[in-house]
Image (cartoon, rainbow, N blue to C red; front, side, top):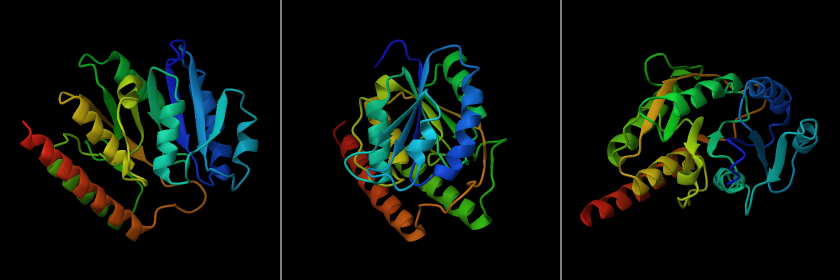
Length: 244
């Protein structure tokens, strides 16, 4: 970590050039309000599929990098964690569903709260939160969140929204293996394994639909991966409980 950098904002990207044209100016306006040093990391695909790099070049404070070793979302997350130099790491989506201005709320909660959070989640499912997704997607999401949190013993209502702020020293101290969007749940679980008193705080957030393009999530692949990951993490939790 670079002690001079307070916040690292990491955006995994996969053909999100059109959305970045809207998102980066908004993000720039938000970051003007920062009093501490920050960095923005755009984690693109292994080989470029659009003009994401050219768009990033218009913003000197944006660090454009390629994910490694593959093109899956899990690789983007791991690459972003490794590259981040800040004391706090903020992950957000690059499709416009996560509003840049909300970053200030995450930071405020993480750094000024009396109960000293380790993770702050922008939550769709606590009081005051909402989502623009349709009824079927919301129902499936809530069901998966309920199953994950109950089986894995995680005390939060929205474990699947990736819009979060973490303590970098904790985030860099875990090993992640998931390849797809299920890595979002794996992060929380692995952090809990390292610290049984991990303090997770949720604040209400209004989730928006993506601005341009199609979602990279295939429903059946999405469901399969989540079930496989749930089984794997549940087995790990069972073994860890047996050792006590």
